[in-house]
Amino acid sequence: MSPPLAALAQRDWDVVVIGAGPAGALTATLLARRGLAVLLVDKAPFPRPKVCGGCLNRAALAALEAAGLGGIPRRLGAPPLTRLRLHSGRRSAIVRLREGAGLSRSVLDAALVATAQEAGVTFVDGTLAHAGLPTADGRRVRLSRGQEQGQVHARVVVAASGLGPLPADDAEALPAIPVPKARIGAGALAPAAPAQVEPGEILMVYGPGGYVGLVRVEGGQLNVGAAFNPTFVKTAGGIGPAAATLLEGAGLPFAPLLRSLRWRGTPPLTFRRRGLAREHLFVLGDAGGYVEPFTGEGMAWALAGALALAPLAAAAAQAWEPRLGRRWEQAYHQVVGRRQRLCRLVAATLRRPALTAAVITLLRAAPPLAGPAVAAINAPPRWHAVP
Image (cartoon, rainbow, N blue to C red; front, side, top):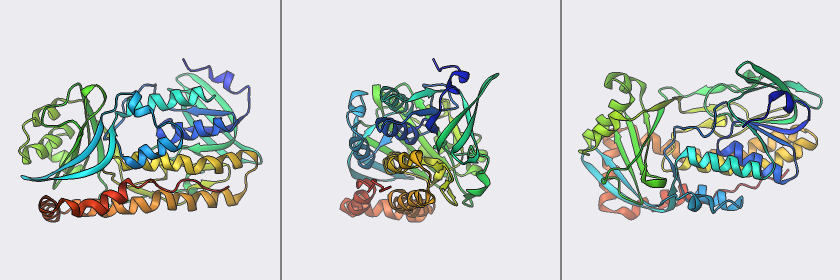
């Protein structure tokens, strides 16, 4: 049970992390290990469902290992993932992957929050947090949970709040720049995966209106993640029918299952943020900018970003210096930005049905051609920033 908000105001916090997804929870853990007083806040009650494809690629697993948490996927029963099956209409191809893992976000996020608490982090869920303007020694963070209100002081605020408005009074200084024709995200979870989604395989189905990714996760469940053009969803009559339409076009027999699932959607996925730091404030994870990911890249960005930010945020908690903000923006560009450019190129290709079909035909004839892209996506990123 989360502590009363009034009790949180009775102490000063070195760092308040807003958002308890992988980026926020791992950052909180790393800072608590350094002896800092860390408050982690999330607006949703935990455990909570989350729109995500349920994949941890090799780069994401390497980031967990670097944080000393490499055993989490295995402990949670995440099945290994070794191949990607691509469909565009009736064309298909199989690409070999460097081993990843299938794990639902609700289970992963809960495990990372538990790890943070074990490290000494105070966690508050079901609570909105909003950072005030900077002062000489930090920022005030307003908290609200139902009728309960509170305010705490933090030397540093980390906004890992995901897609949507930035929770800070000076958010206009770090504007989100939308990308025209950005797709919306969607996700769902089914109790059991159909036989056509084979163990160890990510099934990706592409069409003119977007794509659907399906994978077995812990306990044999089916995790479904998708990205659609908003007009395609409207024409199809909803997210479930849109997903089913793509599967029907690929000749897959379990399209009716997708119509029956309880889907969750997101705001438009792709945007970039102009700047990632203000005085006593760092922006991290999806809140820093997003590109349509494939086969677990988004998770790798979040976890590697946390590893890069931790030493900078720790230094900022001792004394804020503008150079720390600049260092974070440089580190983010090196750790996340370069990898997002690769996904942006892939996304642009997959928006062209004829080109997608040609690529899948080529990969079917010569699977090794996918090797360089697979290696680039799964390569462990450089994550250690220097304060």
